[in-house]
Length: 193
Length: 292
Image 1: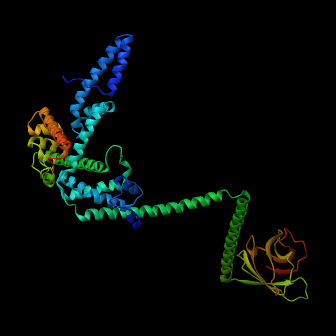
Image 2 (image 1 turned 180 degrees about the vertical axis):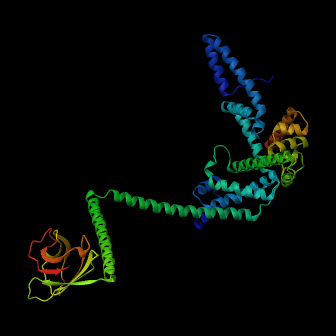
Image 3 (image 1 turned 45 degrees about the vertical axis):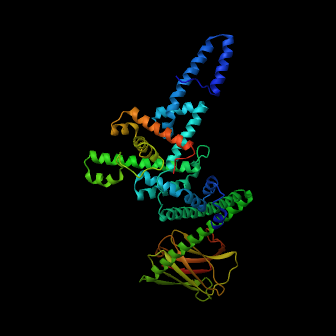
């Protein structure tokens, strides 16, 4: 293992090359990938789940997926980091939805103990979060629409119903927000942090 | 209405339709219809692409967009731009410091896993080496298998015979023990047919027991082709009582196993017979004892 570690030069070796070494069961390669992307994965998990302990577990789970199923990554479709963050988002949102279902069934059964247990973990639909570094550049209504759709996994119907706006208005807000973001990113990140 | 902007595939289709127009006319109209339909679909899909990139469409809508993306390069380019927006959204969450124990735990798990894999690989290699050994074994010549079979047969036979002999000896020892424990134990003198000779020994027996212990001395030594054979006689005839040999000093101790209790016989006789014993005496009697 030590010899492998010595071979891995963080500045030279690409993520894809490290993945090949992960496929050969080299823990040093996984360490490199974790050092490169662990913080981004954890930050995203924490941002979506709002729970440090659960975010830690999810981070570990994501990297264990890389360790055990590295062959699932397809370099033709996306960069490794993009793939990693996508699966982080998908799994975090799955967890959020499961929590919501549990708390909804607990509330329907009038099970106060379960409801209390999960209440802090379920993000209220229109709560203020720490502002997203890109979304902060959008008007509040567009920011909220994208936030709820993309980071909290609500359906358009759920969001529209909760915000008491027509479905078409919600879609327009999301579309406008995304178009603005696209324009900003095309401008070479001039307005971005 | 937006002006038409034809992509490569549409241009090719239109050119082929124009060729058809030179020949006929209906195909040209159909091609125009196809392109109009494609253009309508194109404008709808373009509007949906941002939502498609952030996973905000229903399954049906997503399937329609995916189908269109397969044939429309310009929509694919737009989709790629929104994929970039979606990826950047994931990148620009407020940064958090990941606790050190998360990485430590993960890497410990991976290292343990790798060690387990390495050990598994080692075991698998050893297994395949063993498998190769047996494969080589299977290709041994037939004569080697024949020899092996004969050896095994001999081995099992020897083990079986030993076990049988051992079982027989144990049974005899138990019977002799039972014999000596009996209160009415008799010692019958065994004499030579030659009247001048001395007593040759005794047969210890009880009337009710079919086992007796024969103790003889001063016997003439026999070659390997001959043994002494015991005969038990009653009014009806004669029965075989077994064979024995004397040691180098001319002594013999033999267990007599009769078919019936020894009290039912009148006389014991001993002859010299070929090794393995005979069905009936083939030589004159050399020793005799009266049982009644």
